[in-house]
Image (cartoon, rainbow over all chains, first blue to last red; front, side, top):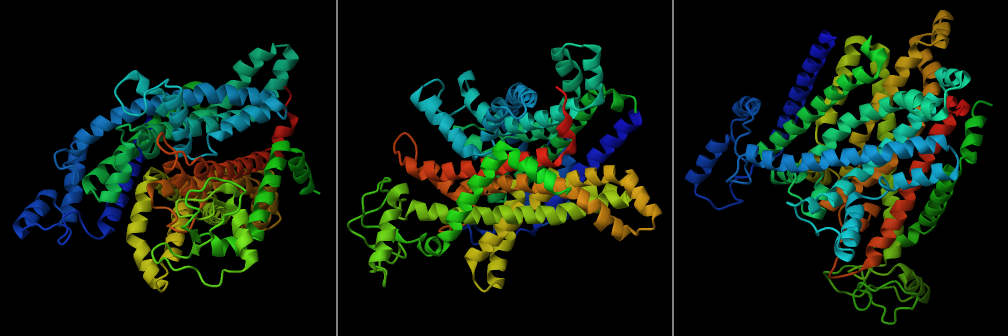
Length: 305
Length: 330
C-alpha cells in the first residue's frame, strides 16, 4: 500500500512537471512580450532594465528560476500588476475561490445525491423525469445566464442578498449556488447510473431474499457501491470548482482566482500564467490522491487489493 | 435483431423521445430556412427596428442596410415578398442593430450545431483511437498515452484556447487567403474539439480493458483471428454503445463551451451568430437599467431546449444500450 502511495505521488509530480513544461513552451511560442518596443513609448534603458528584471530574453534561465522559486511558494513578480507578486495575488484570490468552490461541491453532493438516488428508485416514473430534468437545467444553460438570473431575481427584486461584491456572509450564497449548478447535474446523473447498476447486482437479490428492509438495502448495500463513481468524480470537480470560475466571478464581482486564468493569458502575464497553471495542476493531482485514499477506506475491494 | 431491441427501448424512453422530436423540429426549421437566414442574419434596419420589442405589427419604414458603417440602402430588396418576410420576422424582436433576432437565432443554431458536431467528430475519432490503442498495447505504451491525457487535463482549458487563438488565428487567415471569419470559426472548432476527446479516451480505454479479457476474444484468438480482425470485428461493435452515448454528451458540452468563449469575447466573431454568442450578447441587454428581455429570452430558450434534448437523448441511449439496467430488482 505504501508502495502504491509513493508511485502515485511520483506520477503526480511527473504530471505537474509536464503541465508546467508544456505551458512554458506555449507561453514562449506566443509572439511578443508585455514590454515589446512600440507598444509603449519608453526609453531603451528603461526597457532593457525591465526586460532584465523580468528575464524576458532568457527563457532557459527563466524556466529554472521560476521553478526554483515556485517550490518555495515564491512565484515572482507579476508582469501586469506591477506592485504585486504572483504569490500575493494567488494567496488572496485562492482563499476566496476555495471557499466558494468547497461550498459549491458540498451543495452539489447534498442536492445531487438525493436526486440521483430517488430518481433511480422511481426509474421511468414522473419523479425520475422531473428530478433529472431539474438537475439537467444546470448543464443546459451557460453559467452567465443562470448567474445573472439568480442575481436579478434574488438580489435585485427580492433583495435577499447583496448584488455582487465580496466580504460578508451574504455575498456567499448566490455565487456558490451558481457555481454548484453544473456539478449538481453530474452528481445526480452519476448517482442515478451507479444506483441502477448496483441494483441489478446479485447481492441485492440476496438481501431481498433474506428479508432485509428496503430502506436498509438501498442505503447500506446499494448506495455504498453507487457512490464510488461519484467519489472519483468529486476529485477533479473539486479542483475545478476551487480554482474559481471566470464567469461567476465576473457576474457577481467576486475577487477569485478564476479571473486570473483568463486575464493572465490575455495580458501575456507570464509569471501569473505559470503560477495559476501550477496551482491548478497541483490541486488536481492532490485532490485525485485524496480521493484515492478515501476510496481505499470506502471500498474494501481496493483496500485489500 | 440485436440492433432492434435498443432502438425499441429508446423509443419507449419518454424523455429521449421528446428530445428527438425537439431536435428534429429545430433542425428542420433551421435547415429549411437556411437560404433565407444565411443571407439575412446580418441585414440591418437602422431606421426603425433598433431594439424593437417582439411584435407582429409590420414595420412601416423598411430600410435595410447591409453594413452599419456605410449607410447605403441595400439594392434590389424592393420585392414585396422579401419585405413581407422581413416584416414577419419581428416576432422575436430586433437587436441593437435592427437585425431580426429570429433570423439570427435560426442561423446561430446551425453554427452551434456545427461546432457540436465537430467536437463530437473529433472526440469520436481521436478519443476512440487513443483509448483503444492504449488499452490494446498496454504496458508502457498505455502508461505514456494516459499520462499525456492526464497532462492535457491539467492544462487550464481557457489558457490553451487563448494561446491557440493568439498564435494561430492570423497565420491561418492569411493561409486561407484572408478569410478571417473562416479562420476564426475553424480555430473555435479546433479549440473545442481538442478538449472533448480526453474523457472519451478514458472511457474507451476502460471499456477495451474489460472487453479484452472476455471469453469471446479468447475464442476469436483461438480460432486464429488476427489483431486487426479482432479490433474491427469483435471490439469495435462492442464499443459503439459507449461511443454513441459519449458523443451525444460531448455535443451539449461543446455548445456550452462555445458560449463561455463568446462571453469572454473570443468565441465565434461578429457578425456571425451562435446560440452562445447571442446569449452572451443578450445578457448585456438585461440589467436594472435596461430590459431588452427578448435578446436574452429567445436565444436562451432555444439553447435550453437544444441542450436538454441532447442530454435526454444521451441518457436514453445509455439506458437503452446498457443491458444491465434491465433487470433492476427494487
